[in-house]
Amino acid sequence: GARSLSRQREAADMTGADYAFALRTPRGWESVDPCAPGACHFGFEFADASVAVRCALLQQGEDGFHAGAVTLQRGDAGSAEPWADVVTFRGVPDGRAKMALACPARPVVDNAEVAACRNEDERSQECPVQCQAGFGALEPRLRCLNGVWYAPECLPIGSLLRLAARAPQLIKPYWVVLDVALYRSPDCTDVIRMDGTPISSGEFVIKYANYHPTNVWDGDASTSWASKTPCEPGGCYLGFHFKNPPDAIGCVRIEHPEGRQYAATEVSVETLGATGWERLSEVVVRLLPVAKEEL
Image (tube, rainbow, N blue to C red; front, side, top):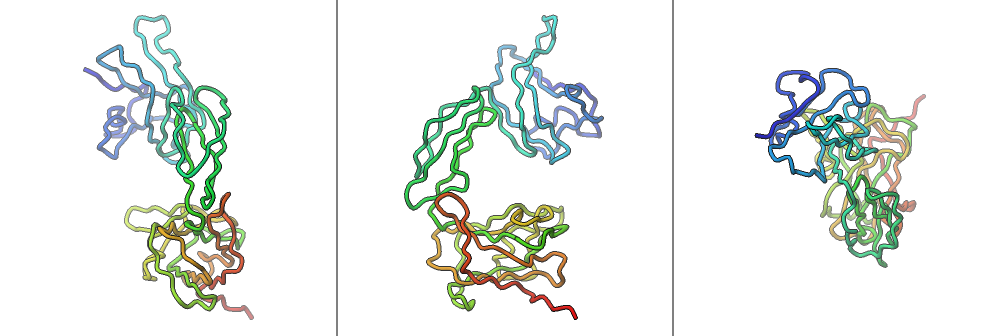
């Protein structure tokens, strides 16, 4: 039968190569030592030698625990060189990544026209995208990276809203927001009903707590969102993807915890425009609690 392979013994109990292919377990393979280029591998021995691998789905650890370049190799016990390189995938991110030997047929992008693509090689292409009138995209280009297509979404203009921290220069260890409300009127009256999906630049993850962006739109100040990382100007945001864009936004109320450590002192309000994020400079932003002036 087929079996998994590893050049190194497992780092701890239940971290052998078998677990890299056990899709229904949260465990995985770990190398026992740090890995210099080419020093570590794991793989699979197929019962049928005719199997040809053309695509792979790899889920690695976070930054510092993943390989940014991965070589797919083919083994041949009867060859003088037991391992032959098939392809090297570069720019592999942490987390989940798909990789293939070649880009498949170009996908269709809804509500858009796709221009001629620039081909770098059989696994890399980039194509400009023009959204139709009334639609916009955050990144108007269609890309094939490591043999996998990544398509933009052309969404109705105004359907995305984000609140981005612009000051101070650094919020650490993370930006924390307890509650957010949107209003049609500049005097923070006529609240807007939130119908859609919360979005953010990423949330802090810990085993026994929840800091998902849903928490800031639930009207409950006992729950909160916390950014995934420390925040420099424009680097962290939270927001909302509306099913139907609101007809007007006049005021935004943002509630922070007491103190200054986790708070933004300036926040920009931005909406999806034809070519990306556009600032709504006329919207009133109320940051709570109000900062007390020092004597």
